Amino acid sequence: MKPVFDFLIKLIILSVILWVVIWYGLAPGTVDQRSVFFAWGIIVANSLVGYLMFEYAFDKDSSVFTKVVFGGLAARLLILMGLVAWIIVKNIAVVNDFVLSFFAFYCIYVIVEILAYQKKNKQKKNVA
Image (cartoon, rainbow, N blue to C red; front, side, top):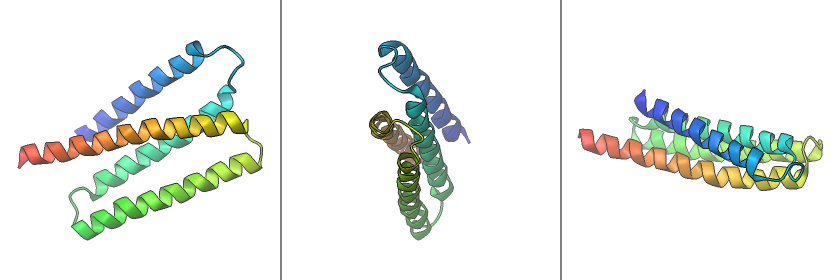
């Protein structure tokens, strides 16, 4: 369970750093923080679900691993597209701020997710 804890700690630290930059680094009123918060929440949930799916499938058979990880990726992307479309159609957030922060958060958190995958693989090789 330690790799999951490490991943959660990294998500929390990254999130705190990003929110400090958003709150204090940007001029007040230039960005709709509610829209940024929606984008951040969706992406953090996506990254967490993705890593938990990886953890579940890690020691499984190759075919199960592939189905869970890549099938889960496809399902998560479809859900993300649906959420983004719903938020835009319902005018829940300022579109420009939401979409730009969504893509920025996605790029950042995918990197963290991939690094966590690599660390987990490296730990398995060190044990073997």
